[in-house]
Image (cartoon, rainbow, N blue to C red; front, side):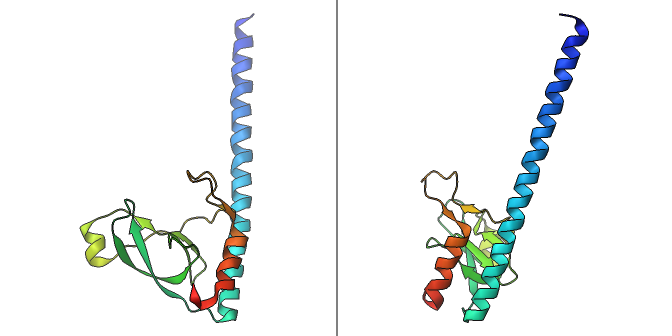
Length: 143
């Protein structure tokens, strides 16, 4: 094997890895865009049905503490660990524990909504985002 054959092989491998990474990034962007549309539909439908938004709280990563937030919206799961705020942003309501959060409240950042909620989780339970949000809508103000 010639020395430049090794360089060609490495260059082909590098290009293949880059192409794969770019394709994966495009797929994730398309999924995030689709999920954002579903979340926007949920907010519009919640408002249309008269679902009252509530003040959201966040839980510490270790699960021991609950913290106030400035967010208003709707919890979308039984554990109250996921929510959609009134501006149509999806939130995982877990934050680092700390005195500052205890005194001043927590400020969880929005995250891209997944198309499949719980996918890859340890408990093995997952649900399509649209099904989860439809269930929340159907529960009305009693959830």
